[in-house]
Image (cartoon, rainbow, N blue to C red):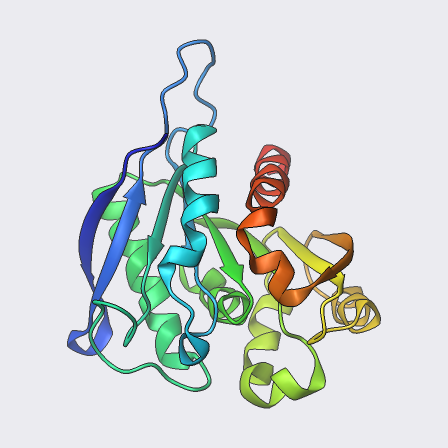
Length: 225
């Protein structure tokens, strides 16, 4: 079982973020292709009760597979100070601050940003603001029309990013149809992969039962980078 370290990270506007680092388990048998790589996981929508604990299973799964992982509570969540925003733009600054901290304090030379649900648009808007981010994984990006009222202004940043992207979604997502996802990715810049999980809903995929499958998909994506 992977160990865990607690940290406080300063964000913009005097906000302090509560973060947890899951250091990579050293594997004596293998070379270390993932040295200098850190996965930063961005939790679901704060306003609906999203918090870093939801990312714990994936973070420890990645650490057990040799990838250091970091989770954090965005502003206004748990022990993080400040106030959550409705559209997630203040939170983009939190993601950027966490990435910069990761480079300075964990010697990260490469960062993989992983966003779950509303964490996906927020992480997506940070991708090109941090040079060290080399790839992006979206778990259930809410591209659908209703969700776009809140998150629509985030779409452009990730779809125009030249960095490699993986979009994972259940075919019964509820917020985004397979057709909507396909049409968004059709004109997206860079290399974009899509992985659909048959018959699974948005909140099902967010649940712990799918953590292992998500970790495996993320590891496959890392090896393709």
